[in-house]
Image 1 (cartoon, rainbow, N blue to C red):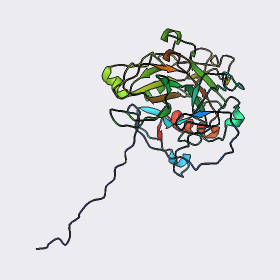
Image 2 (tube, helix red, strand yellow):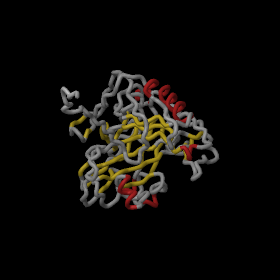
Image 3 (cartoon, rainbow, N blue to C red):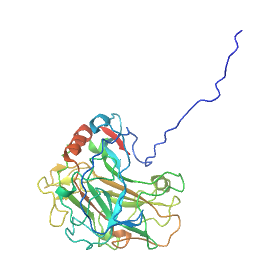
Image 4 (cartoon, one colour):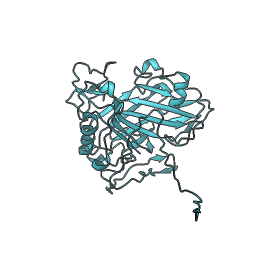
Length: 345
């Protein structure tokens, strides 16, 4: 008879917890490429609400050292195509370089994500190769929305945790669609310097903001909305048990193929119909760009409003100042190939 000489006292285990938005498709986690250190240019007074210091900007979260090409592993068999990326809050400023270029302080307050150099004086040339808050270093595009206030207090988007699940909140940019919606669609590349504005900043009711409640909408967390049977709201929900108010914004996905901007910043792009067909005059089918923002507002409050007014005045801006070759590469490998390339976080 043999006797065991020793017993194993304990087994070392570890659990990797990946926090994703519950409605987000599961895919490969992609690592950042090595970071560069581009030169910064001076900016006017700006506010980082998280730190409460003028001119302070949030830092890009550290990533790995592998290249995008080697780390981006397309996954087949998913019901989604494309990718998504976390882009944290950069700062707030009363600037709008698309609608009011060269006019610092002429706009209501906006919260900026992505490119960390964005201000009233930004140009395409000054925006490229800058630092970014996105977890893909090549995503130096700029995204912005009006600042949100709860009972007069500005809320930093993408911070805090759900009171129900404890999940940390975030801001995510989604360049993806479903395989069903993408069937038969020939996507085009997103042109460099493309600028888009969606929503009506002067709206005082949902009716005055036509895509609100469909292509743009308010919600609680996805789990809460599913349990409540609510698909979309035209105004911010009165109370969410999670303490979270979310905002979903889908940018136009059809392009005239010629202009990267227009006098009203809208006419050069359009929305596809319910069958995902682009209207006449807009032959180029752009990859979908969706901005999903979570705000921790708490379970009890009296009033939520935007810097532009009532929550009916939702609007957002997108400026394609990506590293263009990297963006083209991702669109070709993920959307052209109808593959799901994962979440970059």
